[in-house]
Amino acid sequence: MSEVHATLRLLATTDLHAHALGWDYRRDRPQSGLGLAALAEKIATARAGCPNTLLLDNGDFLHGSALGDWAAGEGAGQPHPMIAAMNALGYDAATLGNHEFSRGLDVLERALDEARFPMVSANLYALDGRRFVQSGILIERQIHDDRGHPHRLRIGITGIAPPQTAIWESARIGGRIGVSDPIPAATEAVTDLRRKGADVVVLLAHTGLGEATEQPQMEHSAQPLARLSGADAIILGHEHAVFPAQSARNGALLHGRPAVMPGFHGSHLGKIDLSLASDGVGWKVRTRDVAVFPTAGAARPRQETEDQSRVTAACSRAHRATRRWLGQAVGQTTQRLHSYFDLVSSSLALRTVAAAQADHVRRRLKGGPLDGVPILSTTAPFRTGGRGGSTEFTDIPAGPLSLRHLVDLCPHPDTVVALAITGSELADWLERAAILFAQVRPGLPHQRLIREDVPGFDLTLIDGLSFTVDVTCPPRFLPSGDAAKGGSRRIGPLWRNGKRVAAEERFVLVTNSFRAGGSGGFPACQPDRVLLDDGVETRATVMNFLANGGSVSAVGAEGWRFRPMGGTSVVVETGVGALDCLADIAHLSPEFLGPAERGMARFRLRL
Image (cartoon, rainbow, N blue to C red; front, side):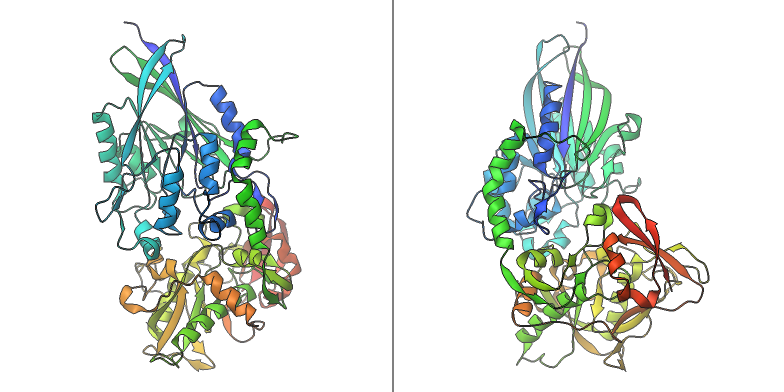
């Protein structure tokens, strides 16, 4: 029998984060180039070009926008808008990312019940023995070859989540969900699907590219997964990046396997075409073609297409309710709150969140055995550009505040946790946070200050302390939290209220559940150090603080600064709105150097 040939097309989304519609809820206005609805026409066009097509999602679809927040809270009794949108587009399967757990298992399980498509994960499992989601599935399809003749094709689909999910989401899933090492779990699941008769196996890997060498519990494990799992095609994500950078067959192969990472928030649609051949016994993958299509840049139709209308209709009621919910008044601010310089100086925006957290813990501990113990508070800079570019900054004018502004200040549903910590551990906490900075050579100009391989939110600094950061020294810690070689120290002596902090002094440190659960390996983030964990969200503490007239003063002597170095300058990029706020970092003698990529602005700072 002569060979027959057919094409299987895989369409993929990843890291949608509840961006069903192209809407900026922080600014309450349309947002072009993002959202599942904006991808609907591209999905329809790609399906029309190949009769044998599957639409798959790679995880982190349920939470991450105000729409998802509303669905998990105010709209908990109604259909989840993100699931409704995905149902409307006819997804064939999806895997779970780490953020699927960010609002707890009850919200996730309701969403799983509503989905009209299967969810898979090879390395997530219920610790009580109940079935949570399937390790893998077989989808049997009748496909047509290039002559139009029908054939049976069995497609296996499995997926994995980062093993750190158990740490990041411990407050939500502790004791109920386990996460195993993704590489052996995926390899076993692919083998099992082959044994069950899969002709083709697709791995939905909620992971980034990472290193080529296999290591236990890798967060970013795409390369070893491509080499070891045995899957025919791999969908990637988690990093909020795009791979390949442009359509290219060879450039999109990892160890000979086709792979695609289609951005985030609906910014891109990924496509993998597998050219299959069969001699009547089984199917073989002969060639692969990989492409990534951006949502932005395409001509917008004068009116919604039929496919876009289906998505819009599925979640329009929830969208309207979310906008009303965000409009409720929560307080006032007498000063502009922005995040343009969160990575280089203390800011009023971060200090407001820190003060609200500390106020909450102080009220809870009042009258107890810890009443009077000094309380310090940590905050993480979330809106600092990153892959979101110039739109990913907080900029709240002085005046009335609504819940929309609190979502801007506190984008994640983290809860407040208070830890017992010593003075020496405070210093190590700050050393771990300061790994964000590149090592700078004294006396040289125009040096890059911010490392690109460390997320901005790792700069989880401590409000209530004064200290300097010496960026001429190498970091004391690695991103894992393990000590680096050499024992270097960047953080100078810690001062509080004009008094030097002693190593043995004891404090209450307020942080969020993400950090307290152990993410990033910060010191004292252990169960036996928890002094308060009442499940109150950071956002709620800020709302209560502002409603009770709470405020913070402009940064004076308190706060952190870089150790002065004559003749040394660094270059940073931030939002163009920073041009109106340069007085906030006058001590760094900022100089505007011109525009940068993604709508950013470049500045020189003198250390």
